[in-house]
Image 1 (cartoon, rainbow, N blue to C red):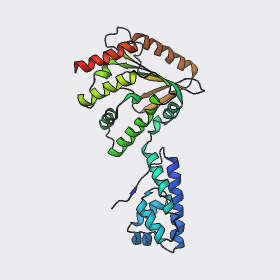
Image 2: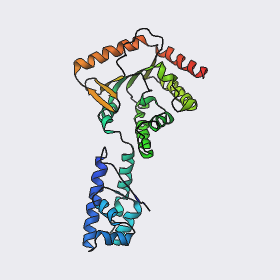
Image 3: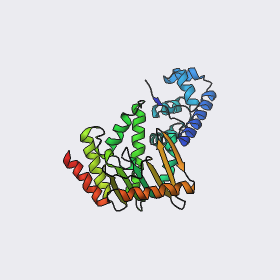
Image 4: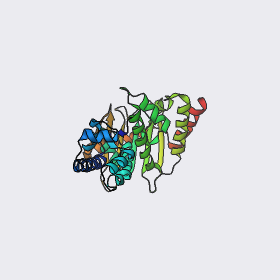
Length: 284
């Protein structure tokens, strides 16, 4: 029976430190009791390798293990008391971003203004849970189920930005082609379009559609984000094929800002955009 999980060091520094502390305590208590790792494992019903991993802080001890080890080693509640801290660490570890996205996510959380131009997908802040899960499920190479759920949870957690008060001002231009692609089949896509209409009506959100019939287009260079953290200069963010780049050079940011202004001018107005999305729903 497997009674432990692995918490990845990547993005889980606090959890990792906690597991190392518990591991050192376990080792000291075991040595005080005069037991080897194999002997402790045999008495608790675990393998020697598992005990070794726990002592090194590479595994997450389950509540059952902490209770049993506390009693066997005469810890007086020391190990048992760590159960709540471990549970909180595991919960935090479930909501984490891939390494290449983490710098942007930290800036986004403090943003007072967000500007998106998306030509291929619906931005993560606007995705429904089902849409996000469908995107991760079709990722190649394939992601395992646990990673998919972690990524979906992290994406949904970011979306509180849109409804927080005071929330950031958010503008977004999405290509009509992205709105016509039924990611996850039409039932899921219908819910996604309905969610875009709902979000587009929020006071702090301006959603625009770039129609397919525009003869001129300032965004042919690809998608990008402009982000203004509170009390700091605006920055740009580019992402392609899991490679990301934060742009802090003022001249480069000004180029992106000018380009974004042109993209918005060429797109449908927010009101026209909501009407266009409603028509897409009717066509379905």
